[in-house]
Amino acid sequence: MNFSFWNSPDALNVVVNVIDYAGPCVELLIGFIAWRNWRKATDDVRAKRGEAAIVVLAIVAALLWVADTKLNHRLSILQQTEIGNNLGKIDPNNRPVTDIIVDVTLVLKGQVTERPNRIGPGASGFLWLCESNMDICHFGDWTALRADDYEPYTKIDTRGTNRGYDIHFHEASLGVDNFARAGFTPSMVTNGVSALRIEAYFIPRDAEVLEGMAQIIVNGGITKRFIVPAQKTSGNRDFLSIIARERSP
Image 1 (cartoon, rainbow, N blue to C red):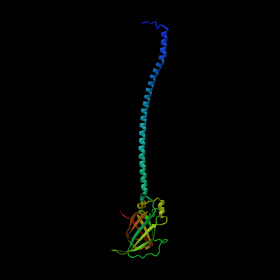
Image 2: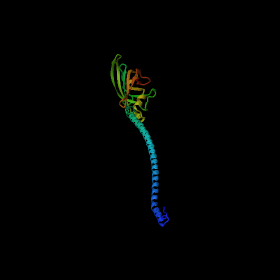
Image 3: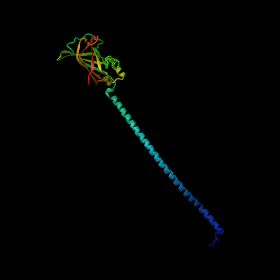
């Protein structure tokens, strides 16, 4: 083999030229390899970040679903409660008392000589709503109901010819106003009243009641019935003063 060329100056020039031209290519190759490794590493990081993001999103979505479910459940309970409260307000038994009347029918023994005088300005009588204790006949504070007039009739049956009266009692001044201010409802009245004290100023005290009945009507519709057992006036009243008892179911 002839080594004379490599010992010549031309050989040195060739090597220098090869290095000059090959150097950038080598650098480019090294750079490409480095870029490939960097890209792969970046993709791996992005992939890991993507997986982590998916996990985080899944956790957040689950938490939101749980919160939404609980919120909807709570809203459902609140809506049902509100609907129940509204229905309770609509229920006639739970509305404020605006009107109270009591219709009383009495049958008295024989013929009655009515008293010419009356107590009060044109009043035929008064009626009080009583609780179970007959000493408490001011249910709802001032609750006397007033009768302005009455309708007499004759009742003939096996007991003979007797005298009957239909008496209509209505709220006196401030009576229902006190009910309303106290927050009374029809159910509170019908459940709380167990007796009625009836005073008829036009009937003498010696009159004898054979039977009778009474009915409370609240707000024009809610009713409760009472019976008037046979009795006479007790105490020192100059007029008929009797008690109606709660009617058994």
